[in-house]
Length: 360
Ligand SMILES: Cc1ncc(COP(=O)(O)O)c(C=O)c1O
Image (cartoon, rainbow, N blue to C red):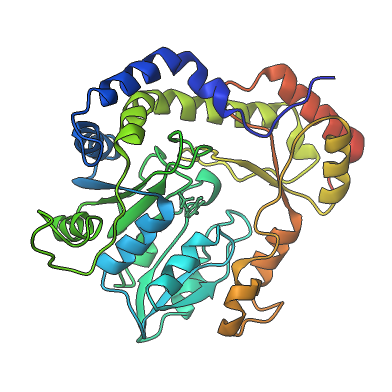
């Protein structure tokens, strides 16, 4: 019996290996390993792709968040509202800046920030709001922008989603190797239409210096690696096709009747399905049946951030974010990657159907 993985990154880059090798060879010519020609060119190409004025390549998506918060002026004494149903880095970056994460609950339909709860948590210390476009599903952040507080879109999981990075003051991405746009190691990006913020992030990412002679700010050493930038320039033109293939695979799960068995991720035209995350109260039964059939599945944020040991000092108790905690208990993802074979998806749905003949 053939096993089915959750994602197959190699299937995505395999046809591109000759071009990746050529990109590697070009870097070996030695025109600059740090902030070399690919680093600068990718920043331009990513900005054009996203439709923003500027992007800055940084070491990873976590640094992108820290630098964006720093550029926004977030520091000790400030509060930053974000979800607890997200990857740890979203809140970790706030604490890294010496500020306090304030968790708002999520909308159970979209798994993204609940706009009403977010508005209710604004205080006179709120310095920024970080909505996360979770699993590739875009949140319309305009109502948050209207609150008059800078919005930082954590778009780590949503590169290429139409409209991403358009509304917030600043946005961040990760190129971790399973992301929609990925590199072959760590990488990240900050995007903004605000030239001043962009200049600040550019400066901060290089020790607060323009020339390594004068150091204007206390900064960081966080730059997108030249080699990763070269690989990203090979991948970027493929992204639209990959995201389309992800959407087609998600639609196929629906056509196969999966929605009669489990709660499907809520679709919307800009969803780029970084992951295909469903919900069921019978999640453990389903996952056991899948594992027995050699099919991978995964769960996310089962202990949401407000209940993580390192963030206990914030004082949240179990039950304080009910929709977040319920999503943590019920979510699970099924195999999906651009080009996943139809037969694999059919097998997945058959096994889910054998485990839970109807939705409970
Ligand atoms: C929502 C979210 N924010 C931030 C990050 C951090 O990105 P990185 O792993 O590149 O540091 C990730 C991913 O890993 C993420 O999923």
